[in-house]
Length: 335
Image 1 (cartoon, rainbow, N blue to C red):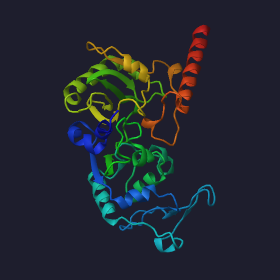
Image 2 (cartoon, rainbow, N blue to C red; image 1 turned 135 degrees about the vertical axis):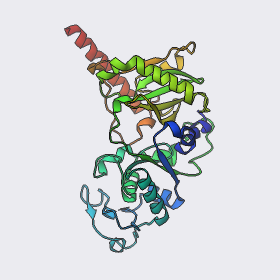
Image 3 (cartoon, rainbow, N blue to C red; image 1 turned 90 degrees about the vertical axis):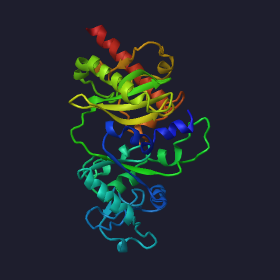
Image 4 (spheres, helix red, strand yellow; image 1 turned 45 degrees about the horizontal axis):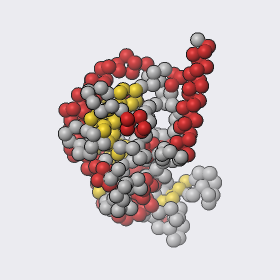
């Protein structure tokens, strides 16, 4: 994998080309001061002071190691302890307020590559749904997974020359409360040919996918041929799609081939050796309740877990596969 392939998967790079077939998104370049705020873990957890005075989140969240398991303290920046002035980003806050309003009042945030999925627990809604700048700042500041974007995006590149992107961006994506996880799929492209598709949420069995599998395959193949093949310049990559109730296909994201991108119901070795001739595409779904995969509750991005041979997650997944095979044999023996 090369740096240019990783760069193409940044949302500010691919979204303009796929705007008409993606989730409505507004993108803001982040000032370096805000990037440093996200990276700073040397002091107390301080939320930015709101210049709009319209969000009621407390200003300071104490470090659990310093005091109790989880505390918040009400107060303005003037009341914060001496030596820890509350940060403020008035221009960025005003820009984000305008974007949220234009996107219907609620958004979910992500940086160049990743969303702060691991910090959803800290929000009042328990999700990535945000309605103001402070909610976004809270999710970003509390996320450990975004360290990938901030510090480690190029670690797997053969030609690594960068330690981080030149600029960071905040993408605000329109919030849709009715999206169904069973209709999201990861697609694998090798040598500019679609060779595999996997159910995205592998921890659940969805009977509807058994009924619609052939129709979904045709929709995704047509979408790839009509919209993706000629527009995305990498030879090898993955992309995630969502299929709406009226059978429209929407691009959700692009990811590099291999490295930290999860192959889901495949293995990377399988994908490397899939025959690359003809129009056949291997489409894998969870076929029954015994075939679900364990959930990966981690503090790193779901798409960038280190599952390379010898890693801790590689061994974990091998053990999970063996447990699944034993469970399947037990079920078949008792049938």
